[in-house]
Image 1 (cartoon, one colour):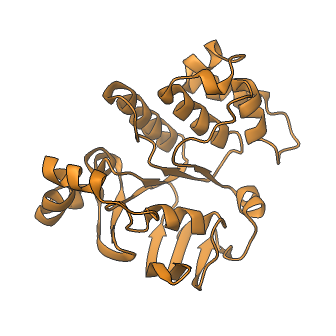
Image 2 (spheres, helix red, strand yellow):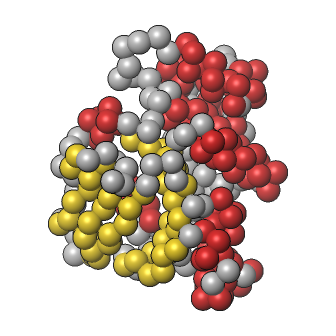
Length: 248
């Protein structure tokens, strides 16, 4: 049984159909990545799973139970957490306060998890009492990941974790994704850096204007001439970054 299974999911914004009946699965322990141009429906897929946008039709099943229709808070409690695009840390709170907010549904001792986050991201320990809004972009991304980890997610969804970051920081972020995978966390990754995402993915899907295109292992799509032409070349990356769309 898949940890996450999406069946014939449709989502509309007004009269615009952002997702046109997509179906996909995420197996326990996998890294699954969604690639596609801006406006393809990648972020909408994550928001639908999180309960942040209403579903027109279709079902989302997680760990054997239907979660479509649940509140976002209930979905988080079930073990699904998302690192949103743009990080969205609380700028006027300290690093430590942001981490504590990540565990707002928990009633047990969270200190071991704070220590685990600090082990993953030593720079956050150094800046524990610094306001989150004064951190660099890379440090804010680390904090956003750490905050999500405070709920001990079974499924961690990440929306464009490398967006706007320097190459060395991107390398560090993808290294952390591998570490989390080794720790047994299942990861659903939305990422425009298709080359880096496919290299670490067990399974991958291509979204094209709200519909699923290709599907295969990360290696298969990495070596597929169609994917190379559309998403991996310099011209393709420039096109993806400039292709407008409000529902990525």
